[in-house]
Image (cartoon, rainbow, N blue to C red; front, side):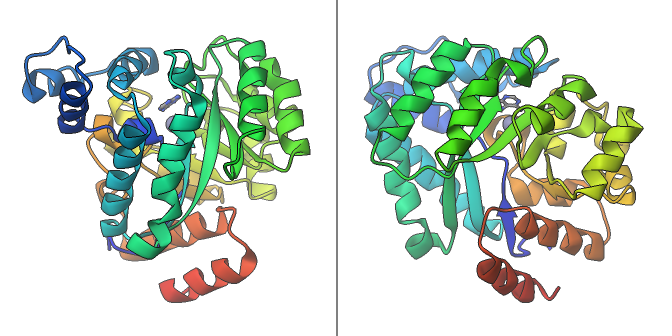
Amino acid sequence: MSRLPKAELHLHLEGTLEPEMIFRFAERNSIRLPYVDVDELAARYRFDSLQSFLDLYYANMATLLTGEDFAEMTEAYLARAAVAGVRHAEVFLDPQAHTARGIPLDAVLEGVTSALGTAEQRHGISTGLIVAILRDQSAESAMTTLDAVLSSDVEVLGIGLDSAEVGHPPSKFVEVFAKARANGLRAVAHAGEEGPPSYIWEALDLLQVERIDHGVRCLEDDALVHRLAAEQIPLTVCPLSNVRLQVVPDLGRHPLPEMLDRNLLVTVNSDDPAYFGGYVDDNYAALSLPPETLRQLAANSIRASFLDNTRKSDLLSELGT
Ligand SMILES: Nc1ncnc2[nH]cnc12
Ligand SMILES: [Zn+2]
């Protein structure tokens, strides 16, 4: 079942930086790490909130310096995703986390897109790149980043919104998202992970996003659930992430089955697999759902993607739906 043809729609490339890779890049780039070995680093992967994870996630990015590092990280993800049955991936990248460290945007984008560009041929995976805005940075920094991305040569599919949610509502980025959409980018945003349902309303009404990343807290607001269901707005849910970041107490109490019962267009994704104990196939398996429900979730992932209708139909017929 884990190999069902599927799309992965909520994956941070920097969240695929495995401990072994961190040590390899650190050595190659002459960076001193504050851990003696992989085991000591991996032992730190215990989080009590989104922020406690983000602190380590950003610190580990210091080992990513060259275009080659970004290309290798991306290629390793694609190889692993192929094993998981991923046939299409729309992946997030956090450019500000790298440009703020003095890494040229072009090196980052060229490294990532060199691996994405051969994914179809090497792994049978079509891809799209979503540039994510760090919501705990200023709106000015977001606009500068968007402008730089728009004037680069790389093909970008969309704009997203991630990082520390509470205290950084979508309303902070209305102009940035308006400009991105006017330039043809698809819009998505993390909302309702740790933040309240009002952030999901704002993402829909003010940023006009087409998908909500996470969105699990929508269940606290009946009117919102009705809207998400009526409009079939996709939610990219990440079960293992939610448990590791203590958004939910354990997998047995994950709200995904209730979300399906309420006719929400739910998809399953891995978020930051190197940190949360599993890739997308592991997330499907961890839910302990009947085969028909797993097939429905895989079909939802294809429907919720930004693929054209012909390719969606092809993948759906491969799935037998
Ligand atoms: N789960 C998550 N929520 C918000 N920002 C992130 N950046 C990487 N993973 C994230
Ligand atoms: Zn995420």
